Image (cartoon, rainbow, N blue to C red; front, side, top):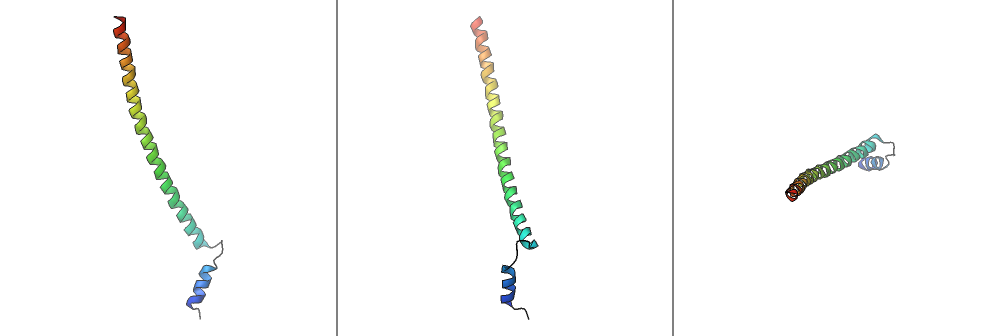
Length: 74
C-alpha cells in the first residue's frame, strides 16, 4: 500500500527528465519573458514619446532660426 511518505519520496526523487518539472520550468520562463517584453514595450513607448516631443521642439527652433535670419537680412 502506498502511503503519504512514499508519495513525498516519489515527488522529491523526480529526475531532470520529469515532464511536470519541465512544464513548470517552461511556464516560469514564459511568465518571465512576458514580463520582460512588457517592460521593454513600455520603454519603447516612452522613448517614442520623447522623440516626438524633441522632434517638435527641434522644428520650432529651426523655424525661429529661419525667422531670425530673415529679419536680419532686412
